[in-house]
Image 1 (cartoon, rainbow, N blue to C red):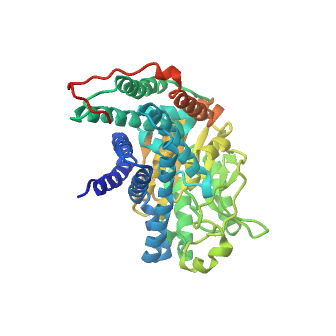
Image 2 (tube, helix red, strand yellow):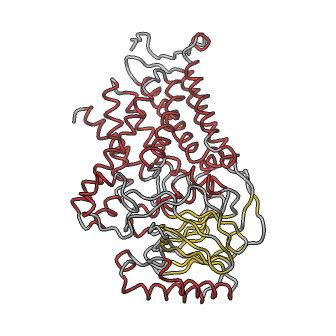
Image 3 (tube, one colour):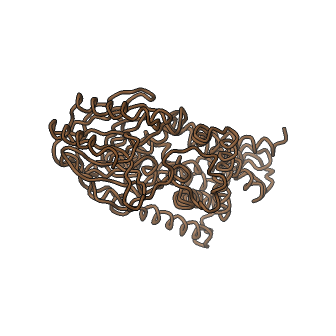
Length: 518
């Protein structure tokens, strides 16, 4: 195989390897191996065109493996494998363009020092762009690979984006170390740039040491008494759930299980009662009375409709509490159709119930559940760090309700749970995630899962949470720490070409008297 083709294959495999660092495989070191390999291939590429191609192939390898669940969602509910393949392929092709942007941004780095300073900034830029552009798709951000490692503690300072920055920084330093030893082994050159080697090791080690200490910081504190929690996982797949003949059965199940398993806080899943709220007023009244009788606060997910015939993916508190929430960040094609006037000829191929929702306000009043102020997010919303930060306000607890049955038996439910873990670390709060068929779990403020239900099983999760108060650095300053560090790195990269740095010429070690220059 020609070496150029081999490099493309290796770039694709490196991208696919990155998926192994995310849930459910959860092998954090795979992220460093993947990025180090990718950066190494970029640095030995001969020109920008070649680098761009390597970047695009890396992106395809990554997204084709990490978000392949898009096919499951589309093909299952459109009942068309062909449509699922076409739209998933288009999705992967578009997402992979972000890695071309990364290569173009990082191309300004001409020296090893500049690469170590510019690559993490460029990576952060593409992740921010992926969060914001075209309604955003902040899934499988690099920082999530470290959710179960101490490096995730950086999220409490600069969010998941700062974790991504740190992972990228360590990886590019490792790739530069590899390049130095490759250069040393080259029979024509046989030299090591001592300055580059020392700087690479230093920039790789410092974030690791700092991360150990940051991980020991406790940003938030308990307020009030601990509360007992029940998560009811109904496990009704979509065709059962939206079948009108099964509605009474579903309503009866949730009512009886709630009555038989009292707790301070009880969470049902997204659209747990799959019908319009005005149609079930008597049922909801009965739930409210039952919850008050057992001194419980019950969160019920359902669909609300107003006088203007606007539909809302919503949730309401009954019993010992009050408040409601309308989902703000809707899922394109799943809950609404973007550019509807252009796409209307194709909508007949989708068979998605309740796909014409109206979004709620960006910031809404917190829910009160037994005196605990709860910031609620429905499904996909928990993937947006800025929106979670804005809606959190002074909440004591984060709750996420979802119906991950849309993802089928794919990687997505586990990736969604991993996202919830990162939100806990960023905010210093307990997180309760209640899903229709898993992954339902309770997470502590350090991002550790303390209770979890198996997937695809009708079950009840019991546990305890403690209301938390106080603010992490991320909650106080948001993206500014990441921006500050990025600007600092950019300034240092510009200064690295100045006469001040040029005076400090690196020592060159050789083991041959006949050295040929590159």
